Image 1: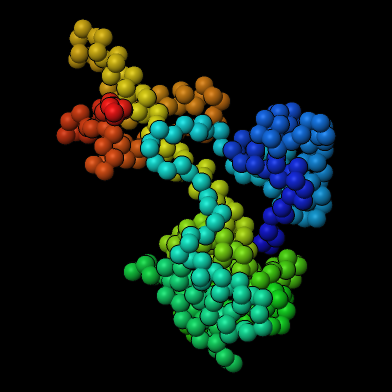
Image 2 (image 1 turned 90 degrees about the horizontal axis):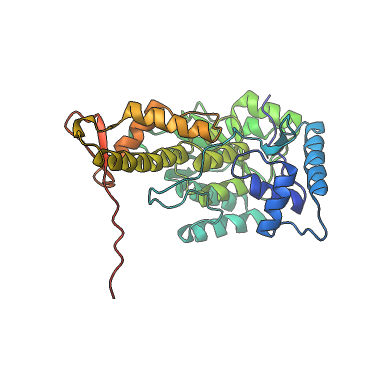
Length: 366
């Protein structure tokens, strides 16, 4: 059975711990407290390491007793980490790209649409809510159609992706009746799937119950449950319809949004930046080494094999548990040599080895 959304921490102490644990690595309570004091999150005059440890431990215990997925878990060695795959890669990034991160604020261009959505949530006009939800879907690159009325769906949205187009049926609840989605609503959300040849069905409401019967019905009818806050969060994250397909799979969107946010910061994008950054360092080191050799034909070359071995050595040196893959090396080679990046050049037409271009940071003379 689909698990209920992850239960959030209930206290400021745990919120502070979450901000530290966001790096994806395990921390002991002693390390957490010291880092929290350093960042101004904990006050040693009225808080202690033991208090932080107990708050985290009790939170995990309560969540598990309620059958929830805790945001924070404890390792066998008593260290704490987020309930995510461990990210033990460094945060090195000299790619020159904007820093990785997940925005919590929607873009200004979306403000009017989102204000209308929030206004209709608080109002009593169900048709206005349906239209506002359809308009919000258009912010993601969908062509949304409102239908409404008795014996018809509230609307549907088509992803404008050419041959990859897909359709999502939209069912809205809560404007003037119950202020949320409850048992029985997933059936309504799935009712028009076949008639409209839709790939997904979405139930949108201001709030969602996590009662067992409701969760079971989502699974039975293949419906994705979205709160209006989930929609706003997806807009803030800058998502488009090409990224959202998995978010319409059966279950709660909030959990999938958490997963996607984690991937955006700790997933392939971060790994590629680390690999590319290390390749620049390694390549420049090899080129300096080559300069000292009398016989330049023996100069080391930055090939995929050399890069794979050297980066794996660096990861082992920092106790990394996940090595680099050849695909990641090749992707970084392609990125560094892309004309729009121009950080490296191929040694010859065989494209088997790189030369890193020296980065010249000339200060402007006044």
